[in-house]
Image (cartoon, rainbow, N blue to C red; front, side, top):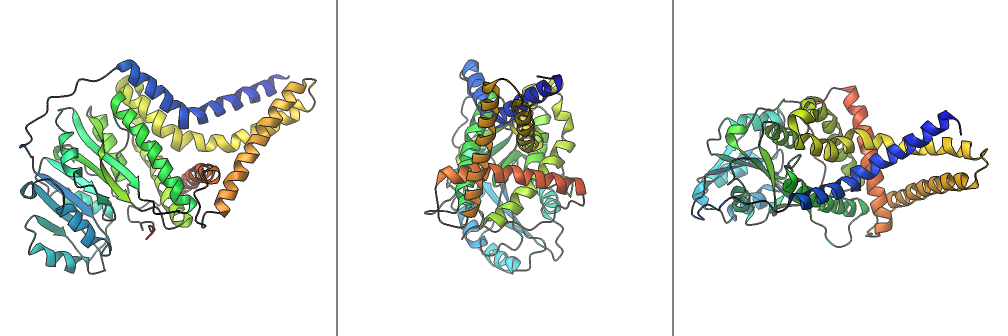
Length: 406
């Protein structure tokens, strides 16, 4: 075997290892490290009667269909009403959201509304809203999600240790009956993400809050650039970069319906991927493991590899496999030929199953043999599309949300 083919072979195994480590290996390593670290000593609980004032910010552009249920969901929280302040940000909405909320303000003293005729984007609206917040803790939540009744109280309790600067709740996908492949895959993906976040929190810190439900110490908020695509990620990682930990409250969750269709989910995933590359560029300083230690390790393992490395490995693995097949065909070693043939066939079968999952995506199916490979390939394809969009520039914080299943 020539030196060229040796390099190709070793490169193939390196890329295969990166893919394995990104999606399974890091979880195994984190689990082992948590076990070696042992149980952490929890901070003594504060008095149950100590309820700090909290502001819940709800950005809602043209979300009138969701506002009544969301507002009632906020009012149903078991947190004392006199300590829970609601701030709905509806700038630029054209669906009578302002009229509805103005009517509700008469009987809800702690409800404030920021409205206006010009749509400047979610980030600008959030930056303006934070200028009006005077409570020590701020909670962000989306208008189209429903929180469990104890969400606010459980998140606030997580701030008892002084080194906690941000707390993220758990995102759960609300599946009803037999969802389409995209919905099923999305739900499975978030279950695995929740498992990794629990490990992250026990190891050191969460690397990225869930925008559907997360909270910060108000005095740690830094205005976010207006063109930011992943505001929740940037806010939480910048807080972590300042030496605070981002904790995880899986018992505080936001329920959200899956995307209406694969095309809608594609829109959302491409935007997230684009924002991922934008975030990596702006948070490049966090890659310095000598300065940020565990945070850098977790950030690279859980986010950077998934966004900026692994998606590019997948097509390269096919290409390198083909190159090795051409070499093994002229080799005297039958084992070598069989080995590379099996690897190539395995990749082709995997992508064939993913293709079947794509074909069936609009049918009511929970056939995991197809939707897991489909969602895996789908996610990585969206990252590649997001990279192209990032390279083209012209990014904007003003965007249309993906439609959710009814």
